[in-house]
Image 1: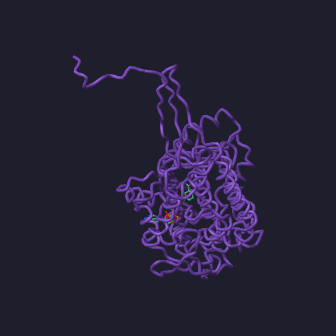
Image 2 (image 1 turned 45 degrees about the vertical axis):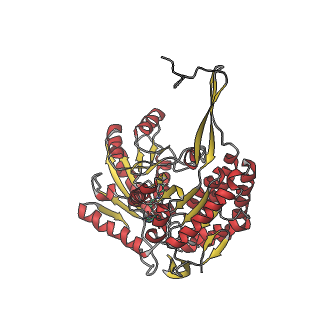
Image 3 (image 1 turned 120 degrees about the vertical axis):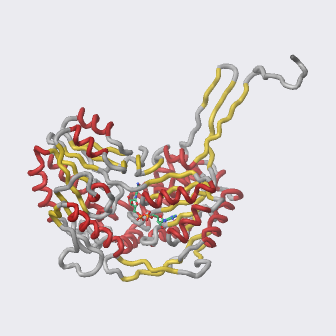
Length: 490
Ligand code: NAD
């Protein structure tokens, strides 16, 4: 049984409720999880508030906080296998991508923000001889961190690390379809001996645990990663208590391949960027735009490779694509195949359960052609191993197609002309662009989306624009004139 983690203790749900988390390879239950309600959220927020108001955390010297964060990073490395096994069982992400990717990155999130904790600075604005004006950044209070089920451990640590580095305290509400690795994080943080109440977890569903966290008056910050429609609802629900938001939302990111690109590398990048992590990836390059002159050749090569992607047991090191997270999500992805066909697109590869996998949420890596950009299959986030291909004539048309969508999270541009690479990158309405690369992260850079893909940026010092408050202090250095009122003068 997985319990909430409040005030450094594992506790049952106030109302005693529980839910099952399933292994997506078999859809058999792994364990029961405490199902949080408003009472649990209130208890956790009170603990976090007390830790902020009367505990040592927000006032600790930055290097003392950094030491705690480094210790958490080390403990993640120490328990890496155990966390990875839990994550694979709970999410179906292949072991190779978890062990070499998501778990080391989670440790890096803590090491990186340990460094950053010591680099939180202010600015000064001297007014020659008259004033010294300057800014200080201070922690804000209690943050509500709400996370999705895709690569949960990595995404949770991506929020917890900067939040703690800034001196805030938090309540994490992990996704109900993948709660186990968050519980591993609670054990790690307990082992790191953080002061009680600094880090808390309440498990449960969006409506019953997430919504009361958003509505709680003692929570000032909401960092949310998930679907755009959920983000909209959260902003509505937090309006009465005027929250500050960081919103990392959905995407339908273009991969644009120009005729002058290194086509071997473009092919590798395009495939990895949509089919890795089972296609359940916010920055997936799920719309492939290919220049007309190379279209036939490129698609023939792509088709061959997609047919050869190895679907299988996520525990097998050779597996490249594992099962989708949940039967409900499988149904959603499958339903998009009917939408695509009805719109006149061609499902060239995949589109259903692969032969030989009668149970679990396996979905064949899918390639869809004859797609026009206005089709739903080109405009909506499928969030599975599904790639749609659209052809374009020239740079202007590529840009028009790339931008003609509500989302704007990531884009991948493949070209041998560096001038064109920059030009296109600057004109794409997107928070992130990679030129001649898949998604290779640099934690110092701002991460986030534009348009329907998000509000705000996290990463590097940008995280502290969200997790800290700026106070501007004005100091008079001399006897500047103060207009006198009420002295009886004319
Ligand atoms: P989701 O929106 O269904 O759920 C995310 C979290 O919100 C879960 O913990 C859920 O319980 C909670 N939630 C749901 N309703 C809520 C409510 N009313 N109030 C408060 N909390 C609520 O998203 P998901 O299906 O878990 O994740 C997939 C989505 O996340 C995709 O759209 C994907 O693109 C997006 N995503 C974005 C990024 C990014 O950085 N931009 C990263 C990863 C995932």
